[in-house]
Length: 224
Image: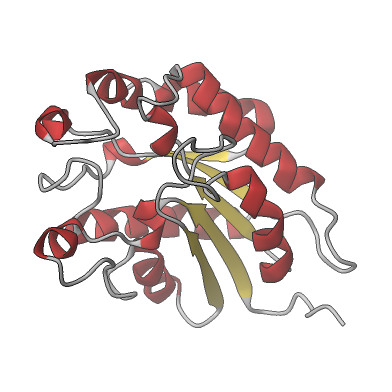
């Protein structure tokens, strides 16, 4: 029997390495790949929201919106979304923060195509066959933080300066999709920036700032 929709509200956070909590300092030192749960924005948001909420973390390093990585299988977000929705339901809110990995040089995608990938994910959430007793969750589209210009100095990086430029363009395209699909929108680049260690991943301070902003959005949606 499906769990009833009682007082506990559930938020699914569907994203890439910045939802996984990739730790650039720990990785550089070779002693830790991931921030502790309480440091990650998902864990901080859980604390801020309180005991009436359940935050489900579904982050995978390298995950794209709808594209298969030619060098590493299993990273297509569309391929993982249905399982994530089905196992976490009933849901009150789905947060989608993807797109950074679509900016890799191997894809060469413009901001408009990356936004179309996000739109496909939104439509998949809307069309998902929810179990009896589940209503459709609200959806938050998060435009990811910018890629730092220092990426050009990173040896064997999957990103280049074109990727940096596209990272500055996607927020506008994402906002259009959010408006058209009736989703909430947050531009993470206005709230946090990548760590200077690798120019892609958030610092602990960035995770905290993002958590506070998203907690406000989620609470606002719950009151509607």
